[in-house]
Length: 431
Image (cartoon, rainbow, N blue to C red; front, side, top):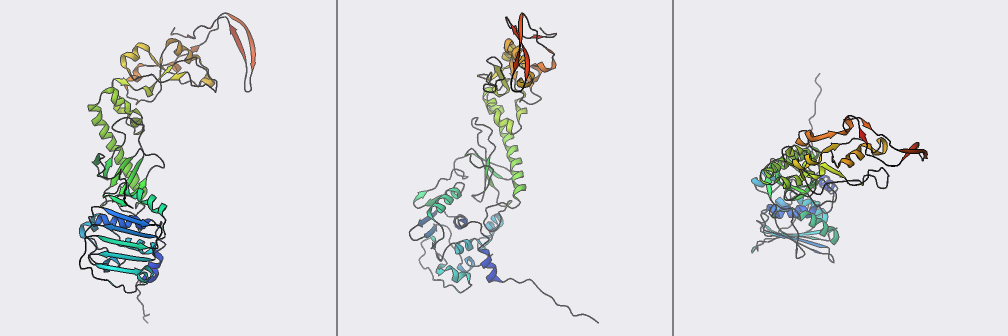
């Protein structure tokens, strides 16, 4: 006996789905970025945004190609953009929902007509009357009435969104700064992940390891919290995608960031190799901190000048008092050549002065030796000149001892010899 079978197919309750999408947008301010993107994709020369806090009215104007179809605008998950935009930017077709969720009433005027309707009416899938526009002036206008945003939220968000945006943004008659945009005047280089601006390569300014990432001109990732010294990356939107619906996070963010860091490191190395060929030795070693962070100290191996960061001078009696500990060392005033280092001599000391004592430091101070700070690549020529004092036996001999007294401290009791004079420490086999 054959048992009858039934077939079922997945269905969508469109009303409940759209109602639920209201809660999928992380921030109410998402609408600002979506409307800015619409203007950019329409090839607008500028996007103008006006907000009246008294009436809670937000208006977005652009001089782009205009809306081809109001029906497509009101269709969820269908994009009205041309094939090139779809191929390179992957529009979701749900960005306009953020506008519907952000206000009580919405007005749209463009070349395909105009609408003025309560947003609940649209979200209930009720018919919307489209009024023809016979003499369109070339400006698309989207006006949100009774928006659930205040002036502070809008101003702060637009300032952040505009920084890397490819077209000018005018907010309440004020042109917003676009310091990170591709046309900002910064020198970008093309890489496999997109366009990169390398900060801190014109003159030394620390390690320079933080970066901001933009996708389609909007911020999507930052590696920092506070600093303004940043590398800037504009990702190739045909290869990298944003998370639906806010576009505020990258898809597979951890993997993408790892890839960005790898390409950033390669690009910085290539730039430093070019700089090494054109800069003086003194100028090039000025980038020591950045070279160290990006593990590029090998580039200094054949440079005939040693950066001050790798050297120390003993400028005072070596002491281990906690209040002045380490104040007896400082960097040299300038970078030093091989000849200058040979003339003075250079040593390394691995002693913890509070545990092992100051004997080796006293010896180096007496001889006016330089101290190697141990920060250069293992292949650097300086290593062949360094005398490692910890490889040699230390002998301290007391001369003209008068008497001894016991020192009783909080943590140790020791006998202290008192001398008429204190000679330099003696070194077995080397003095």
